[in-house]
Image 1: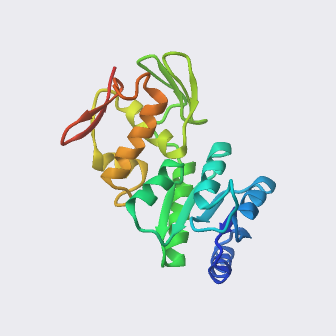
Image 2: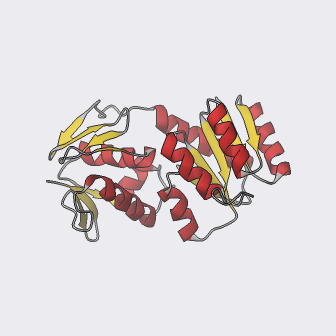
Image 3: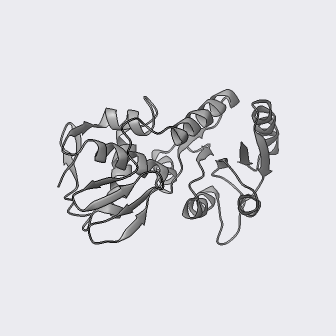
Amino acid sequence: MNVLIVDDDRTLVDLLVFTFTRDGFNTFKAYDTADALRIFHEQPLDFVVLDINLPGEKDLKDGFDVCRIIRQESTTPIILLTVRDDESDIIKGLELGADDYLTKPFSPRQLIARVHSILRRASIVSPDQQSKYEYSGIEFFPDRRELIRSDHAQVMLTRLESRLMTYFMSNPGQVLSTDNIIDYVWGLERGSSEMVRQLVKRLRKKIELDPRNPVLIINVPGLGYRFSK
């Protein structure tokens, strides 16, 4: 497994390189946005650990920009590291396609545990997960995170969007509670109702013909959401 560690704190990078190497990973390191993307394009990576507050340049200012570009080109899992505990920053990172986040200071063991958890979720195919779902004029291929809408538009989903779509299409017409969505998409106690709301908002933009007037993902006040015709 190859992991890229990106942070301008060289002491922290060295500590994480030691931790990941001891756990059996091959490590690459970068200290700014340009180096991060250069290594991403040059090396076959299985994971990216990415600090938000990075030195950068005009069109590549910080870790958010790096996250955005990586997610446009790849489904490689990303964990964001940040001293920012403002919910808006966390939500922004998740909206850009990050799989998880950790606020500093944190335990390297905790980071390793998060990485393994995400990698397990990325590799496990649930018993009820099909190679293709069809419902209400939509075709969804979870193995390649591709969706064809009822108007024949083709869209690609992020890892989290794909997990949510799988959950919805596995349970059409059923009311799915926010807690159950959190458990399926992130793991118990790893998400929040606001994170679900933002993820649903992103998914609606991709699958609804009119996201402002959704007909597929329906809010059920006080309970959760229902995926219906």
